[in-house]
Image 1 (cartoon, rainbow, N blue to C red):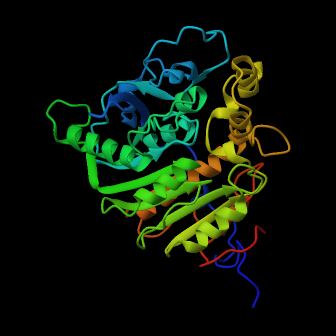
Image 2 (tube, rainbow, N blue to C red):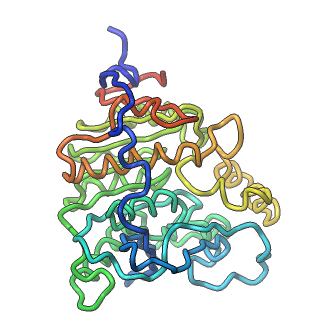
Image 3 (cartoon, rainbow, N blue to C red):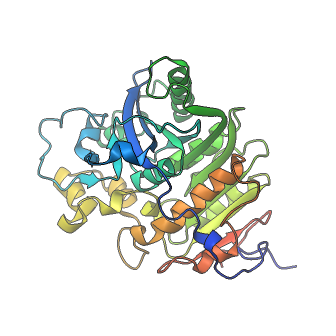
Amino acid sequence: MKPAGPHDAVPATPTSRTDTAFAAAGPYRAGVTFETTPAGDTVVISYPVDSSAAAGKPTYTINLLRWFTGSPTAPIPAGLPSTLPTTLATTAYENLPVSSKGPFPVVLFSHGYGGYPEQSSFLTDHLATWGFVVVAPDHRSRDLRAVVSGKPDKSQNDVTDLRQALALVKTMNRGRGDLLSGKLDLTRVASLGHSAGGGAAINVADDKDIRTYIGLAPVPGTPPAPKPGLIMQGTTDAVVKPGGTLKLYGRLSSPKRLVLIAGAGHNVFDDGCTIGAAQGGLVAIIKTLNLPAAFASIATDGCSAPDVSPPTAWPLIDQVVTAQLRYGLGIDSTPVGLGRGIDHAFPGVTASVSTAAKVTRLN
């Protein structure tokens, strides 16, 4: 018997509306706010906002230079050239009220090595429009500031960060007059992460609060007790090698799903390749600031041809992640848009999907 390939376990179907059901923005607008845990860790929270509350308001812009200090609200550190192309406009609105509807499921998001909580705003904002509250702590043990300065905060690890962030929003949910008062459905909590954060999302998934988990190009994690899980990976990723991801997937318990994005690199799952792209993007930033070569190779993997342009793949990623969260958290009784049809549903990008127990080859 030949080993299972990515297509072997899911019957082929033509593209249908369900294949792209969650690719476009949902019925809400995205809000964003910043909180601090008792341990002093910054937490970025993305959440649903009613369209009427956002009308006429300006959207939030990320400034990457602020994360050199370790906070989206900190001043730009002295000595960093403020003219660098390090800003990125988002579709989120800062500090608006949470939607009057709800309560809403919670998604813990873990950023990658050298990253920051806002690193995948294309995805976290998207999830907010579909009614999720995304809670993203800053991992001071391996965030942008730690990697660039060479001075990581080793007082706690990333799983502890995620647990403390969840404890923070639980407290906010119980408080009176708080932004999140009574807004959270704490029976529906998921973990999601990219790269090192993907490993953290898998590791924390064994906690009783977590009902489903998603690893995006994840480093190896410890498989949790059986619960719905998803792994996504680009086939040309040179940072987290796809072969290792296939081995990790094989160790996970069913129900599980593997989605491979053909020709995509490591940073297809974050915003990094699009920051200041017209002025040289991350390459220009890295050269100007003389950042470590090892970090440069990680930060730019997947940003250039022949790899798939990340924005081309984002609708596919938005669809798959949203669908998995809805299914894994019990919002949808059966998966919507997680079958074979996604392999050709999005122009300019192809994908394969498997629910097999083990996958040993990329195609």
